[in-house]
Image (cartoon, rainbow, N blue to C red; front, side, top):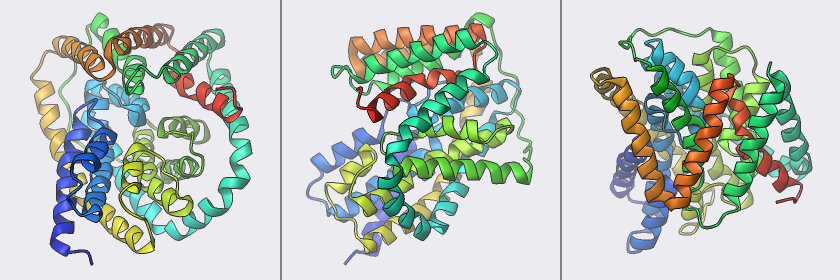
Length: 398
């Protein structure tokens, strides 16, 4: 039997910890999950699993805030940095984050609503479609390059970031290598570029600018379809799914794009539980930790689904409240000093998390990202850092 009070306390504690992991760059849910199952063995595994899942879902609602406001992205929200930053510089930072929150909430509801169909799809599509995903990723990569007006420079950025991804992911001495690599490509490069341009943040407007209903539908469709691909194909990350969605859902506003990214982030986390239920395989570190302490049957899947619904309500309120506080603080600071402080923070965080090699990786990735900024190359091109290694993985080159 599962006690109501202990389950609720587990959910609330997960929400609290997920808030911190979402707001603090480099503090990852995988690390917390491993720590929890290692040192809290006296706690009932069911409540520990509920805690891990509540933390993970909460994290996906809040991790867009440092990505957009501070330019400190983690792997799942790397592509939110640029459109979010552009809206921030126009005075619409509130809107940028609100749409990622809305995407997370609507995406979760949509996924739960079609969960029976998704469970069937996972069971039947996985083995059939697996041989073709490498070719799909090649097509997406070529399409990204051909869409650029500066194709030779786009090829250079794609290959350079791809080679960096190969080296990074094949170097076992680097702990959490995606943090310095993506922080450099999408965070530090943007902060450095803004620092040299002496960019200033205007006062942020609290007015809400709605998107068209057709854009809302397109964004949710893009989020759901690409997140389903994440669930079915184990080597596709949320960041790669965002690239795929960007190419599939064309002519979409920045706000709708951010809504789609928020949806992908949360749907991917929830769907990873469905993947574990159907195929017995974990899709990320947090769910892997969960799988080591409990057996996921239909009854516990229902409990985790209810947990996700409860968490989403709290997470929306916490994310909005945190955004208000963060933007008020940013408005009072000199943006150049803030940029410099964030650059120093990311270098220190990279050293603490990934060691000296992490700092070297941050410098190299920042240089590539800065070059993309100077050449005005679409930043999705730099996702070669994940696309090329993933393609190689599917064709057994890596």
